[in-house]
Length: 367
Ligand SMILES: *Cc1c(COP(=O)(O)O)cnc(C)c1O
Image: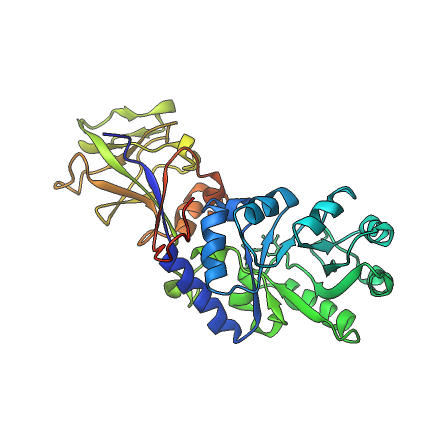
């Protein structure tokens, strides 16, 4: 018997989430964001399914991630979201047929010096995130230089929202307004929305949308959203109870004695911990499912194990399945307890075997 902890990646759910995105955006072109190993879901199998579903574009953070996809046979157009870091990436970008974000003047100069074939580029405009991109008063000059550059094919105008996931705020409409006023005269395609933008700001859908988290069936919002029930979690992290303890009232559980039993407790020990990517910050009370029924963590999560409350689940026994997040327990909810976001929990997944279901396309999805 091996350690019973695994992540199951349901590719049917991935297809459903893509369908939902297409329905919400009614014919807009979709860039599937699969940076950081598809948020821990495995970039190659995820890309294969998106390609089978005729995704318009894929996006990764950097050239290393793009090359892994090309070497695995992925043919879809691929966008480098951070652009190239240095000029010596240009020959590889040509070889691997990649498109790039252009977000600073050095990149324009490199394209002007480039001797190879032209690239499709995505001009990043900083409308208020203030991370990367050209500021509004730099945009006209950047656009003119790129338009005049023989090494630039198509230009798509893009921006990124800083706060589209926050409930009541004026920031996103302000960013949309700045973007629209800057780009109105250019007759180029536009791209603004991440998942939160797609779900909350339909007026900003533009010509292209860039969903990441939504594809994986997780909501970017901390509070409830009407679309929550239509998102299907792609990743399910499960383990099993491998020991059961009957503890008296008044005893501490785990490192640092952060939880003291307030009554006689039946405690299950689960074979998953922070070395698997479960957030160590998740306090006592964070929900888990035992055979689909809710209960809670007791005490601190350790490296390989955690302890959970079975006092009100008398039928729970050794070998029973424990769901740490997935169907019936959104990762966003666990993240909220742990003071993090589902993005980070997915990316932190490690050590556990990843099992793919819903392949059904011959070669597709073998990792
Ligand atoms: C990661 C990323 C996205 C996807 O964001 P989600 O919130 O996961 O939908 C979109 N655009 C850019 C520029 C990104 O870096």
